[in-house]
Length: 271
Length: 278
Ligand SMILES: Nc1ncnc2c1ncn2[C@@H]1O[C@H](COP(=O)(O)OP(=O)(O)O)[C@@H](O)[C@H]1O
Ligand SMILES: [Mg+2]
Image (cartoon, rainbow over all chains, first blue to last red; front, side):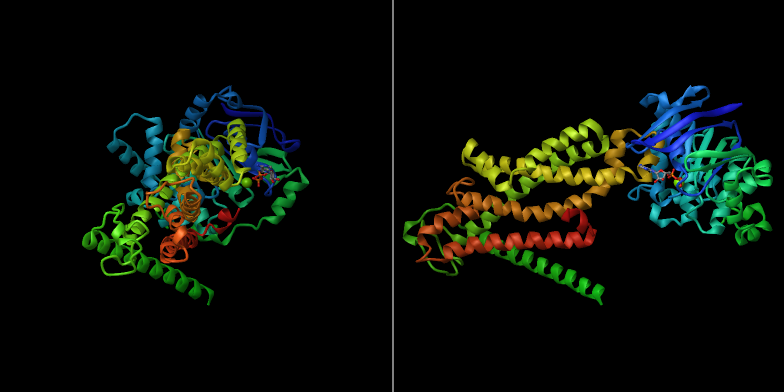
């Protein structure tokens, strides 16, 4: 079943087109990867879908979520959608948290905005969410700067999955992490996706991240989709020269994933 | 090497600041607890007395105790300066935050108004307004607020415009928080440092403005012990008893200097040199 259907999406900065009429579908529960070198318009496309574009950018086209066009949503509908159905994970985990507030306060505010729960219930839910990404509940009272990069990214994943969204848009969530933390976060995301059954729109410039988890792959170049299809066909028989050059540029299995290959899942979450 | 120098300089500033504060506090305690003079008590038998234990700074042309008047002047000049500053911040910052956060038409409208205010130099606006509304410290305050709020609105706006792009704001939006909440709970804390620095640098300027306008008779009126007004009152005795002008003059210089030092110290602490320079 189609969850999100992007149709002929265009994003312009004034007269300059940044995304040039892309179309793709995300099915319920699938992992769709968008790859392309930096500057190819991946983030801009993802922001357009969540109506998060910078004020100087304008989006045209359609983004149908369960048949309704997100680009036409009013402020109230948008707030509800963002809170409960679509969530984001960003590359810059440091910047994703307000430095003056504890991790817990971010959860608290979020839950308060969307649910009628008692203070104790909110706290419990937040601590459970932290545990579900392999963090100690004590992190609730910590400030962002007191956590490591991997821990912060885990917290933002916990926050993103808190309301059981149907679609998670992850914009290079591992690009700013060292390769071991990155591999762990990636595996955590895959696990949680399995558990919750959410769809994943996973943006990356790194083919290694795609090999393992993706179901579908979209290749973007200069604001256009140059190739799309299921993982096997794109990786095994790339049609476009650009895809082949991306594959040539990507090293095969990295040392990090080699390292992680043998260990058991119980250690996936340790830092 | 450079870092050691900076540390020493900050420490020197700290020592300097605290020494001054202690000195002023000591003098105030001495004047108010031990001497107990009435600042507006006129005693023509005691005119223009030189320094003594009874009158450490002497007396003025009406026989009033100078030290008491200088110290009360601190309350008046600095107090009013502070009040003006506080009100300017209270008006300017919300306007700037809203303009920066909302963008679009609201932003353009508010910033055009700010530009209009910015087009006239402080002193000119203050003089014209005091002239129109009549001399008096309240009108002078009004004039200063009207002139100064613009700086805070602009600083708040430019900070908000840069912060607005950052992920934590996007994140807060995604999490469905209300705009109000994002503005005051997430954005505002980032502003405070910048505002504090600008404010402490402004305090000196405002004090100078109050004193200079009071000196030319547009601000505080005699017999209020405002330093600028005191300078004015002391003018006829400039040749015979220069101390009458030196004390209020020194007081102004000291306070302005201290507020600039405080500003520098805060600026180093928050390291926002660029924004303030703009
Ligand atoms: N707010 C903006 N205004 C103008 N151009 C932008 C803006 N944001 C991004 N761009 C441009 O859009 C293009 C695509 O950017 P982006 O989607 O971030 O690439 P990536 O694929 O690396 O995520 C880049 O050339 C970038 O310079
Ligand atoms: Mg990007």
